Amino acid sequence: MSYTIEGLIAMAPKSFQVDQAKGVNASVQLNVTGSQAGQWNAEIKDGKVTINKGVHASPDFKVTADTDDILAVAEGKLDPAKAFMMGKAKVEGDMTEIMKLLPLFKR
Image (cartoon, rainbow, N blue to C red; front, top):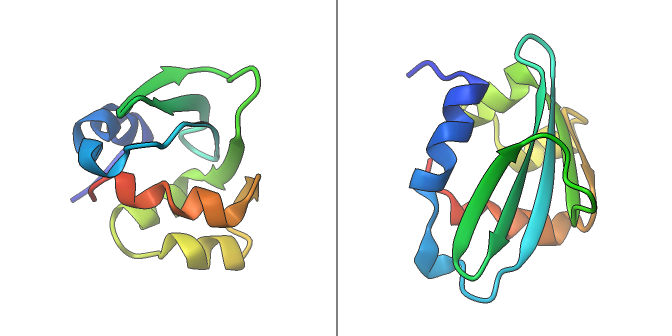
């Protein structure tokens, strides 16, 4: 399946695993570089996720990655942890905590 960044952002709320989000309160700033560059932020609170275009005033985490690398993760061609270890994804904030957010979204 071929993805776009806008398509992934639109699918994120539908793939959100409410049952796994109990007690999770976090805000994430996503900065996408490359061919489909843009900025989005996600707020996870009270078992819900809200995603908005733009910059969050004070996110718990910031993730910056290139379009191609994000799409590779979405397609299962690149493991998110490996992307970080290879320097393909830059994360500001506690890496252990942000990795706990990944299972909240089905692929």
